[in-house]
Structure formats: C-alpha cells, structure tokens
Length: 298
Image (tube, rainbow, N blue to C red; front, side, top):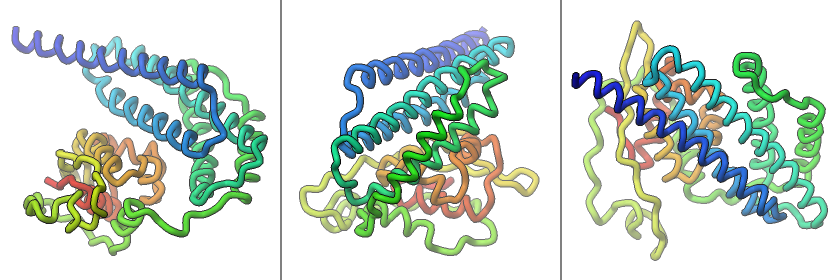
C-alpha cells in the first residue's frame, strides 16, 4: 500500500513539474509579445538568460519522465518537446528582432558583445539539430531553413562589427581558471568534501576578494556524486541541479560551460543527468568548476 501511494505521489510531483513548464512557457511568450524587444543589449542578455534557464528546467523535468506510467511517458515526452520547440522559435524571433532594432538605432555594439553574438550562431546549429532529431517523432512545427539562414547571415555580419571582452569580469576569469590545470588520468573517487571555510574568508567577505559592499550569489548546497561502471564514469542524476547552481554562482550559463568544456550543450545535459558517461578529463574540470563555486564532490 505504501509503495502504491509512493508511486502515486511521485507521478503527481512529475505532473506538477510538467504543468509548471507549460505555465512558464506561456509567461515567457506573453511577456515577449507584450513588451517586444528593445535595442538595449542588457535587455537582450537578460532575455537570453531567462530562455537558457527555461531550457535547463525542461532538461530537469525530462529526467523525471520515468516517474510516469510507461504508456504515458511518450505522450509527456512529446508534450515537453513541443513546448521546448515553441520557446526555441521565440528565441529565434527575439534574436532577429533585437538585431533589427540595433540596426535601426545606429548604436555601436558594447564591449563584450562579440562572444554573445558568436554564441548565438552556435545556438542556431543546436536548434537545427534539435529539430532534425525530434521533428518526426514529436510532430514538431516545421523549421524554416531560409529564415534561419537569413538570421545566421545577420549574426555573422554583426559579429564582425561587435566588440570582444578584453577586460574579463571576475566571475568569468574564475571560470576560465577552473579549466587551466591539466587533468589527471582518472578522477579520485574518494575525494572528501572540502571543509567549510572560516567566516573571515567566506565568499562575499572582503578577505575573499570581493569589494566592500559586494553581495555574492548564494552558494549551491549540493555535491556531485560520481560512480564507476565498467570503467566508465557517470554522474548521478542530481548533477544538472548541482552544476546549474554553480553556474548561477559563477554567473555563466550552461551553454557557456558546455563551450568551455568543448562539448555540446545537449551532450553535457545527458552527462549531468547520468545518462551518458563523462570522460575523465572533462569530469576533472567539471568537479574543479563546481568546487570553486560552492559545491562539492562525493
């Protein structure tokens, strides 16, 4: 009886998460349709961050599809894929609208715009790949190749006019430092959680390197759990949540992290959900990143 009730509660929780995905997608679409897109670069980056967070949330919910009855899993997977595709189409149109607004305004591109626009180009390739892999299975609305190519051409042109980020912000510099050390041949599976730092050097205090008055993002509480199976390393399925928290602290996106690990975002998500193995060098760099930004390794 308890087992049956537990299954019922688990399915109800998963269903609530799906409903939350649908509500968030509606809210994003409503906000964009009512406010449109300004010609402010900061507004564009804020929207991209919201869209990235939404995609990560769908990744998390998809990892819970196994909580549904087997006969309902495919229907829920189709629902999530269609919701995701709708938001990806909004991302395409938002990018197009912003580029048009910038062109009309005549404003120069701000410092740091080049890597953001370059990332948008790579993002178009990921959107194409998602549609190609899922269109037939989930009956997705067709992709307009000509429109996507037109946007790609617009981005390429603007990348040549944009500015790189020569003066890296502290969070970005820390994130790059995480990946500067050579990786060991294999990770140590028994690395203990780091001891808590004294109050005098905790993040956010002047002794920790922050300017007075700076409020640091709250630190993640989770730890990466690694298991070895047949010589391959896997993260337990809390990996996406832990790494998302670390990205929030470092003030970078999952997309940025994937680029720095030199793997695609979909591949990274599969690894973080424990579905695909992760190579030892990438695991070492990922654990270093998480430990530097408040997480741990168990």
